[in-house]
Length: 477
Length: 145
Image (cartoon, rainbow over all chains, first blue to last red; front, side):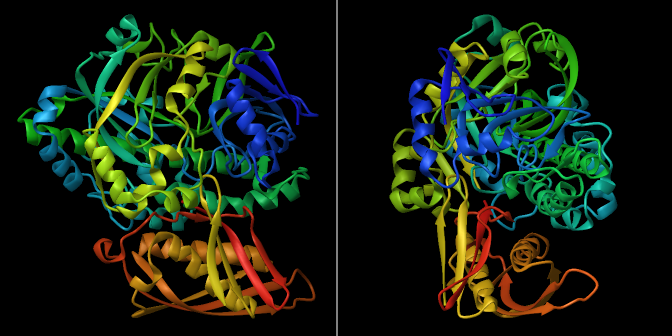
């Protein structure tokens, strides 16, 4: 399929239907995408299929793109509220997977002096790995509260404060959620998972603020070179997966009931304004709320671990920002010269709103929303800021990470986890993992080069670089 | 009869093969467990019975695998031995029903003993197939990890 270059970093996939997917990439990445076209499942084919869904107003793809279920990871879709559909593929299983971050009141030197003790403490205090529950064990009615109140719920349980909520996307709670849209099974499955990291590519990382690119934004964000930072990457755990599992057959029936032609089964969907569509939208946002709560609890546990080791107060470490990358929301954007309310679905794509937007915390509003781009294990992460150009070009969306370039099976076969651990150790990075075997699948070489991915967003001014973070300690499930 | 995993860029495919559909289901379940841990490390000491129904074999496979993942999170149980019985229920007035009865054997998760590689989170419709190839049945899908 033809891909036309529109500008240096913007390409358009020549689909037969409108809107044509807009891909932000460089020529090398486009060549890589094209080389995958022979695979039975590939991002170009998925975008072509996705673009046939009714009521679409736009499809935007970021340079961390890779194959997903029906919709590539790294995609944002904008749909008309009346004629559009809500599809499972454009949000996926791990609802509101995202990053919660903290600024520590400690220099790199201070952290390095007690790096080992801090790593041990975090490993002990942050529940992670398969089958491990958290400190909160909720019954079904408490789960209902959590799903409707999000991070507010855990603040009332003593995790975090109202001030922390100001620094979370949606202030940690999407309004208008009905817990009834989520099955009993989903609630039971995840009743002890609030405040747990999980496994796979999820992590809790202590990082050094290595380099500042934008002094003005860094000042507003409170970031200083030589200081330390924490990124917590996880989502709604089994809850999001069970919501997806429960809604796939409902959406499959809805696709038939409303006569929606879909080119592949993974694109099952429902008209947004149908009963099924509205229930699914509510369930996604219940999952979103659970993920916000989950990350705020972990953030609080990390603050407590840091306080224990360094003899400081829990409130000395500050919540920097919390933002997700798998979501479905109603947002207002300028399109075709007018303000429009649209259904925005993001799959492996971070909201990155520009300056002056009221959704951005007041403290950061003059420079734009912080975007935390998670690196792969052992590589840099980045803090970017959203821009006006993103609001015009990408529905205020940007990258979420480096994006996989190698399958888990290949990575597992290629790297020895103990050797990997040693190599990272030599670089001064302590990795504490509940599953040593699983480390190979997350080898940094199994991901794209994050610097190249970030630079495309920076050079196209969709979201620009504020700071680079280097890992010091990484806790994995 | 045998099971295997196959490549997928972000996740992982699981496949079971056997002389009957039931065996293919059992092997596919083993393949999914093997994504998480060494199946030989799971002692089949505690049993559990599952009854499910769906409109076709492929939807039933996804439902069955997802039930195993539900039990992993809710009861912290993982399983290594499966006895699956499948039945097609003919119905004059509506669509046929495909029924599954399984007795599964396993034990509670022990992070030290089971040494997890990764968590399996959902069985998906992606590359989902239950088909006959020559003398064997194949049951497969992609698992979200």
